[in-house]
Length: 310
Image (tube, rainbow, N blue to C red; front, side, top):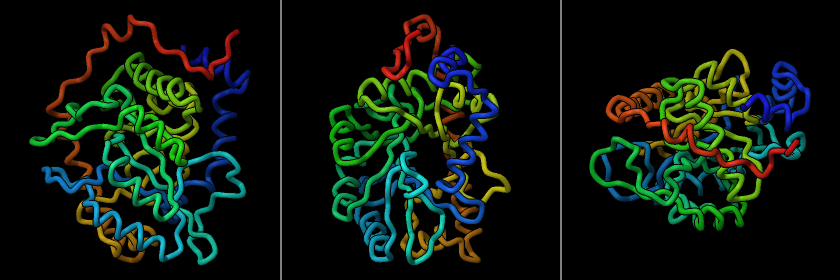
């Protein structure tokens, strides 16, 4: 099905040709081999929880103020006009950073948005479409549960320059799913956001940062232009469907943020800390059962308003 969609939307362009085209057009936009200019946040929340992927509100504000004073420009992921707008160079004349939030928590609207608006920053939020407006019961995190953004909050953020990508329907480990299940997660989430917001969804964030060749191929065939993982270190080659990001967590300060962005000689320490934190996320994979797809696969899938009818 997704192969047929590609023919409808892309014409006769082959997968190999499109990959080359995307590599040419996006390699200078995101995550260079030497430095990484994509930040990843999750919750911005003062309420205590077991997890450490959150940031306190004052902590987040101090970091945004630091970046603003240092001349950094924080913006959303956007493929339009990138030859003119995007760069990886962190010199005094061009300090562009791409800001992303995974999971689509309500705190993006209630806490992060007012701070970002104050400094003129925008961001891309990756939504778990099956949990929009609901508590994060998909997460194994014991204790307090947190709300996700509602569609009305999402629509308001869009008015102020935010855009949105897919973080799947259910937040599963995609590498544990079969082809039909991966297709369901990537296609339905993309189409739902496009239908609700009336704009193309070109970016995908892999839950838990996990992917394999099957997941990458389906993401490309469905029509995503880039897909993002969590790994923050430089890679030996550019892959538009495995773009790393710099995870920012509870223990991060303006100093560690500076270290991560500029990859100073002690960057390896911060990178190692981030990788250890990401391993703890595997607790959700271990203790939460895989979503049931029987009824999902039999039901009619939402159709994107951007799919051409033939």
